[in-house]
Image (cartoon, rainbow, N blue to C red):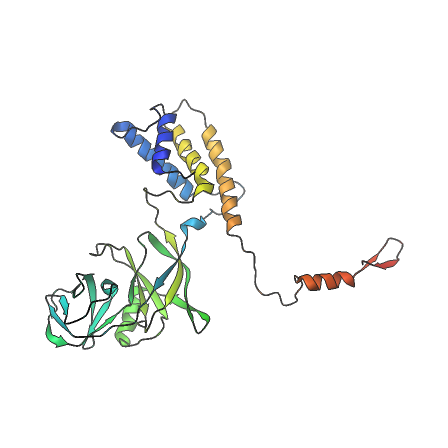
Length: 317
């Protein structure tokens, strides 16, 4: 029931008269790839539907994710030469590449975790004598590779309550770190920072302040950066995606009618309705008068009355 990119390309190729399997080389392959790209973009970012005033945003392109912090570590001592930090004993934590190394009130951002005993700083000019104490803070958290922006608030649970983290600018985080570098507590502020070109291959980081003093599970929703290797939406939308690609293919074949454009328009409306219903709110908050309580409804019906046209009043039970 699933649809892959190759399925879309084969269907487009067959529609354009190139057989059941899409060509893999030449102009035909280039055209098919461009058609599928355009068809996917048309579905993921649709225009305003007939009778509406705003575009629909797909829920599956705004997933909810969780990211976890860790308490600072400061066991053993270190030696630093040309930005390479060697741990005297023990192992660097797996999240070390996301950390900030603090030595004598100076902070150094980590570039990469080379091994269990070595990490490399972004500033490779740093050298520090052997036997120096340190603290490695986990305050720069790696965001998913398909991350394209925060949607709504960030939250975490503390003392059985859900707390918010305010999203601010990166410059604000840097300024407050300089002002209060040793602060450790539950995160209050967070900022998104692009780190393209980093040696550990991530695109964005989440900077938090204060430095987390323990493990916090931060929940957030984000926009997905779609890729051409994945088909988003799942089985309920596969026929709509196929129709979108076929509607684009029709523009490459002038002798064809616009029937796939019409099919796509109908299927798109159905997909939008399905997405809205699947994510509709069923609970709108606390109802203080209890009017929706089944017991209250039965009691109200028990004592309700009905007056007929002649003016005679009767109980409804």
